[in-house]
Length: 277
Image (cartoon, rainbow, N blue to C red; front, side, top):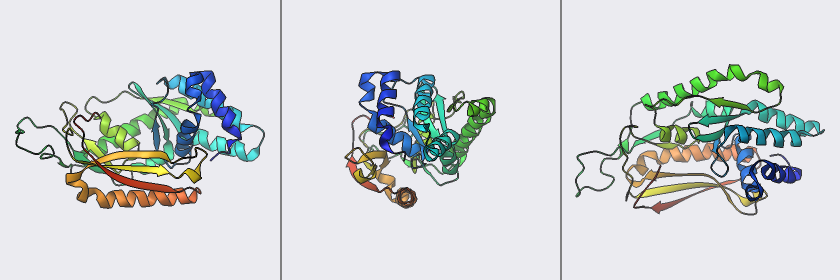
């Protein structure tokens, strides 16, 4: 991670582009962005700032320019960020992705859980009666195809590299592609929900296991554990996904150790009357 001489850079950058209120969130935002930059997270969904891709890119460009300075080592780190980071405009949402991390992500295993609502479900059935592992490879292929299409648009942005600007990419969403599934995949979850875009899903009152991965407080300057990942798995398919989750966390932990960080993962049981994805 970049050293926090840049503390004021993050704060002042947020204040300049997003206002005083946003500048108070600089530590959380800086930690998430740095974790994407070093590959500990493949992507970050911008949900704490105004979802303007151009404004976010301008903010990043400002911070990186300020951090470059005259220090050759810092300059090399910033240059690596410019090579890896992409701002992605996805419908009304904005993500920051690490290009290499996402490419590796699509080469790794992932379990898709079908949570499609069924018209013939009876009141006597359990809420999770129709939840199952989705065995088709089509879903993963659709996500990979979308990403390939996104990357194919990058050639038009090559001049931006010489201008020391983070590249901004936009590609229309396929109406047949489930955005929830795509987000789950891009954010690096080992277990991802799927349902046909034209149908509803059934997670209300379903017994779920929530997995939370946190960055140990000793690994950054927040003074408390920082949540990197949070995802749920229906309890009824937990036994079918546990090996995948364990292998995923093992690989993630090894990556963290190489970066001089420590991760923790916890599980908790939840069941909610309404689940919004």
